Image (tube, rainbow, N blue to C red; front, side):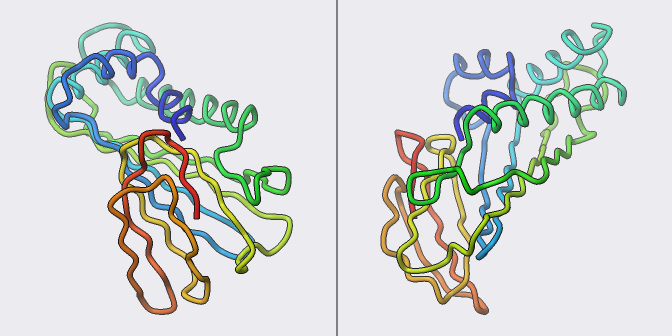
Length: 200
């Protein structure tokens, strides 16, 4: 999902990548995998200098460069993110089933930008944004012979939620993996490795 992260952050991500690794920007994933559909939820959080850079980007690139982020500027960011995400997924899908994305369709892309972003661009208050992408599969997929390959942001946290009747044969590309059982549900938790690709 590396391309989607870059898409969401747009030019801002270039600035964040050169900052010291201080936990100022975090990203996590929650994938809900069903027999005929999938939902991939993303949450990003900015604090300290990354929050300032994020607010400054919105105000200077999408707004009036007044030093304040207003609601209209956040709405413009929302539209830009959704449009960019749609284009990136049309170019390259972030999930494959048995090595192909041909039978997967994106049905909805949603974004919820934190209104804590409002105000002075120099605020360091935490910003938490969330995004989700819904997919449908042309045929049922949850069987023992199905392999899923995902493309995510390397080193980010991921939770995969699926029916407890599915046998987990591999978690290649994931680190620090734990598997737990809930009510009719299996949860696979871990961190995406160095390559950004992981499979199930």
